[in-house]
Amino acid sequence: MKPIWIVDDDQSIRFVLEKALAREELPVRSFTNPRDVLLALEDDSPQVLVSDIRMPGGSGIDLLAKVKERHPGLPVIIMTAYSDLDSAVSAFQGGAFEYLPKPFDLPKAVELIRRAVDESLREESVDEHVTEVPEMLGQAPAMQDVFRAIGRLSQSNVTVLITGESGSGKELVARALHKHSQRSAGPFVAINTAAIPKDLLESELFGHERGAFTGAQATRRGRFEQAEGGTLFLDEIGDMPFDLQTRLLRVLSDGQFYRVGGHSPQKASVRVIAATHQNLEERVRDGAFREDLFHRLNVIRLRLPALRERREDIPGLVRHFLQRSAKDLGGEPKRLSDAAMVLMANFDFPGNVRQLENICHWLTVMAPAQVVDPKDLPPEVLGTLPAMAPAGGHGLVSSPPMLAQPGSGSAATEAPRSAPPAVGSNWLGDLELEARALLDSGQPDVWDHLTRLFEGRLIQTALAITKGRRIEAAHKLGIGRNTITRKIQELGLD
Image (cartoon, rainbow, N blue to C red; front, side, top):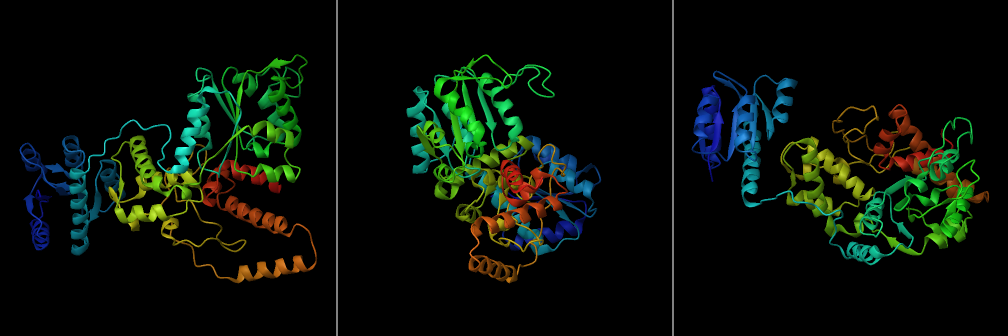
């Protein structure tokens, strides 16, 4: 193993670290200024570099930048007695492995250096180049079945219904079906029917003529016309209003439609792919979805497995998302230790692949070292957050703090939060009493009644915390923004 280089003009710091590392049987080489380090780098390189920030003859931050130019994967620990925000930010922006304020606890400093050494040795033994990643990843048998189905459908224009939980990647499958079809040269147009208000959805789908309604100052092409010769992806089709289902059925049946306010039929040469997380058979039985439309859409059904059903794919997805996050942020991709990967693989991911991707974004920003240990994982993966809280209390906690979405109004990053106080069981007792009273009284639809109250209070609490910002509230609740929009409409919370 190569020696650890210590750069500090303070002789006592060098002496203490040299002795402590020698007891750990780690070789050490010391320098008093950055200039000597740069000269030594011409002929040699360290396993780990530990450098002070302020020294005669140069800055540790400048040294960090020059070292990273020559050895991008070298772990560099920055020490300073001036523990200010600017120094910390400059260190991490420059690619430092860790920031060590003085005076430091010697055993903790040695432990940190040992972690950096392990990282450096791992870098030498594992060469993980970021290669061109396929559009979809998955070695699990369930995903291989999906890939085979996409291959079989590549030469067909048949309508496809994709089912699966929220966040499982239904739009990715739709895009793959389009890309490998005979219509790949045409446009791929996607619309989420749950995210658009009912009175606007008809115009979004079919377009409108000038003067068709107040504000219609010009003729507008709808999504069917925009997708001409290509593929139209109708996401969350189970939430489409009942009267619009009739119009969609007519288009699928005879390939024609009318713009809103129009009198001339428009032809539609469009392949329709629909997706939903709901059980459409139940929606049909409940009278919320047309049975004839269901059979028209359900020609070929592809069920996308939840992430917990394909745990063997989690390590590959983690590496992919960490590499992509590092590329987006301009840094080196982080890696999970074996113990951390075991925890990730055993987590159920209620938000599926989308939640896994968000966690990887969070780790890229917030994990302190290149190798992510179990203690660096967000609380919900470690199981340290309660599942839920009483109405009006702390709310549901699921997704980690993450990169802000455009327009969310939140800061660029959010610091990791401590777990809220432990939640007692009184609210469950109250729920039982309420349920017993409703059941004993013979009230119908007890499930729906209590579920609406529960979901409504959760969403209202999250919106109160985020000052009405829906996207941020959805992140905090661990649900998709389309889901929170749909729930707000269904529950009448507008």
